[in-house]
Image (tube, rainbow, N blue to C red; front, side):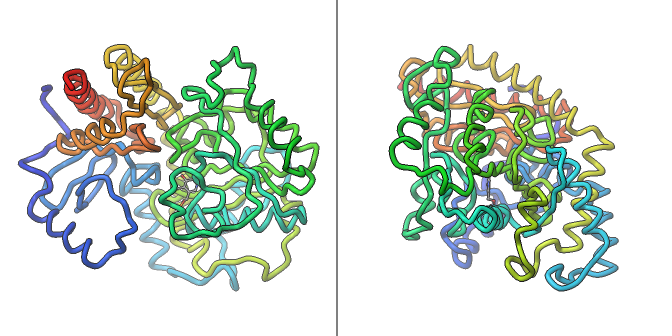
Length: 450
Ligand SMILES: Cc1ncc(COP(=O)(O)O)c(C=O)c1O
């Protein structure tokens, strides 16, 4: 085992204090929350996290892709403090404040598309999706939505109707919104049609046309097509490069394209938005998670013509665009630019991916390595040939990582995801990868004996 500079674990986890927090949480907090391991946070700075017992971890989870500029970036903290001293809340549903204009101007210029755009603000990803659902129905006067199997768009009743990544998320909540049509995502490693890319020539698109549009979906009743450019909770699965371009035929029939950038956005993939890797311009973009470095803020950005179809009173949210969150959003955008975090995501992420690909050649239990920038997934399998999902093995890997000072989590059933802060220093990333490799080697050795 290599000596560690950043990860410092003293003794058995959870420690005494963390165990007490876990116990009390179970007593008072909803059991619907599924956690990966007993981390009880005391403080976090940059890419390092301390727990209540004084252990230190490297952060490959970033509050689930939220801490884009790392924990407590001084410029973000200063922005939060300054705004808190001026006014904490005023509700943009009824009043005006200047920083909201500034953030909106910057967001519309960052979202792809050389046309006028407008922004609706909420607090969470699901709220951004709810807004996009209501907006696209309102504008098109149509009712149907298209979404992918494996998609994750949130857990509120509307967003949940689009979500199709795990049955447990819907359990006990049915029925949901009717008129949502799910169709397979082009998950090339597990192609639903057992084809291989690129020889398949995008058979997935032909299948969708033949089996959906020609059989039962009246396309002129479809309001919008919701998609993640790289599926997140579905297992860190990027669509193949030309996929969204090939799906653009839907636009001729008036279907709006809603690009869910809640997990892929704000520089995570090395470009500001994930869709920029795919060369299409969506009509609506949903943003949350990383936009305010941890303050709750979400945005639904749409073509002005589309958002202009709403009349006063049709949609709003008391806490949306909280002025402190807006300041944190502005500071986040400043830091991303001034500290060149897209470049860091590209270079540190690129090197990490290269190392993961090398690991894939060494370890039987790595089936696939995917993603771009600092949005990386390692799919764990029982063995390369059968591709049987290594769900237990993936859990063992993140558990090993936790006990050795690395916070990594899974996505989908059997993918380990790497989503550190966008400003993670290379040496911290390298040490995190050392721990991850050790974990994979350990689980690989145990599984080859089994
Ligand atoms: C792509 C995507 N959309 C929507 C959501 C929902 O966001 P929230 O949990 O903030 O409601 C998530 C959350 O993980 C997500 O990854």
